[in-house]
Amino acid sequence: MKKTIERGYMVLILIFMYAPIVTMIALSFNASKSRAKWGGFTLQWYGSLFTDGPIMRALVNTLVVAVLSSLIATIIGTVTCIALMGMRTRTRAVIMGITNIPMINADIVTGISLMLLFRVLGLTNGFLPVLIAHITFNIPFVMLSVLPRLKQVEPSVYEAALDLGATPVYAFMKTVLPDIMPAVISGALMAFTMSIDDFIITYFTKGVGFNTLSTLIYSEVKKGIRPEIYALSALIFIAVLTLLFFSDRIPKWTARQKKD
Amino acid sequence: MFKNKKTSAALSAPYTAWMTIFIIVPLLMIFYYGLTDSQGSLTLANITAIGYGVYFKSLLLALWLSFLCTLICFILAYPLALILARVSKNAGQGLIITIFILPMWMNFLLRTYAWLTLLEGNGIINGILSFLHLPTQHMINTPTAIVFGMVYNFLPFMVLPLYNAISRIDTAVFEAARDLGAGRRQTLFRITLPLSVNGIISGVTMVFIPALTTFAISTLLGGSKVLLIGNVIESTFTQVYDWHLGSGLSIVLMIFIIINMIISNISDARQEAEG
View 1 (cartoon, rainbow over the protein chains, first blue to last red):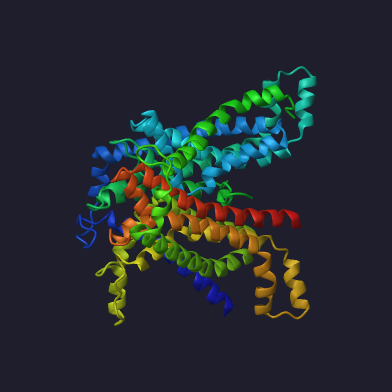
View 2 (spheres, each protein chain N blue to C red):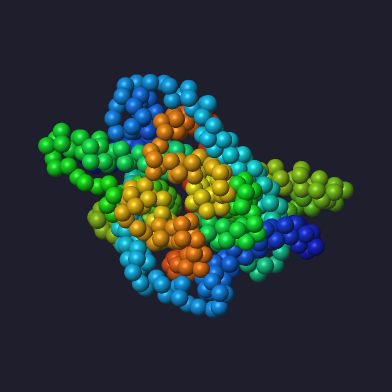
């Protein structure tokens, strides 16, 4: 009896989370352009999707920003974590405190504050400000993933490598980096996801004429979203589903929490 | 490791510069604009504006709706976290990914927008209700629809910390409680809830702040009929171009964020003290 109630409850939550996704996938096959009525089954939106300039540009922008920002944030974040290890606890606490600000602050405030800066600096052409903003909010995710791992690394192997004549960089590459690599990768994945997912900060920092998928969708809400966007989302969803299905190593997504 | 102070300073220089320019300076700019008027003279008018008219009303409504959202999220999430923590650890993680993480890969604006199709006057849910001869609901463009959208979007932020807190409790504690004669209800209120209080605080802060400051959800599900403080700030910047007023209102939002931060820091410190 108790089991049945538990199962039923989980199924209800599952339906709640997936109802809009099923709706969207259904709408991607809807021949009628209006989402209010069903006009029969069609695949035409999946064809016209790839010739749609704005959607394809937004998709490319989203991916380029996500790849570049997570890559740069991973490099800066990892290097900074290494530097933090050699610093006094007080200095380290100050830097981590400031790093936490974008995670604790509301996205709307972070977005507005960056917009003010970019406007004053005259950085208003599409791509660059968005990239800078994404790097800024991605670095904390990398650092919060790498720093705890780095604290567990045994320094003796690194020191032994130095004693045996390795240069510091070579010793680091051969002894420390392999140890922290899982944390670096999971930080990078987290950063990539946050970047793809972001709407608010992109919305405030982007220049005129530059769109990621999020801001394109937002701008289309008032006049009605075109079915091609449903088709694209369905494809992305299926792709992620397939990836998850085939990957054994699912990163620790629960680390999405602020700290742990 | 890496005890060389000079190397450390050199390695940290790029990020120190980055965070100064892109985290500290932008925040100082909000304070600068928020505390000055267009002539550049010091004023509190942009902040005290929150006490009047549409600003006051939109802040109160946002506080009320985000409170409701947090409460509903907690009521929905706690039993779910209990169930997830009880099934084996691996299965729990797998279920969390299926239920909450996978949907996140579909754009949140689109998912929220899809609720329009479901909630509309002649939408699917009303279709089912009228098929069952139940009264149909008018939800779109009401505060109810916005709370609905908030709960949908922020429920994962409540479930994850609760799940982590509950699954960390040593099962021996439950066994001890049962041996000492505690019933199911007594175990919940005297063991599980107090031991997961840090997860609760973490979940509440992670849901409350995004709910309080949202403008996208209210635009999508509230039409332009329901204004939250997020909508007001957004339009102050993007339509009225009044940086001073917008920054002043943002400072007010930051006060709520700081209160939240202090609460969660206290709970962190307590957790560390307890070990």
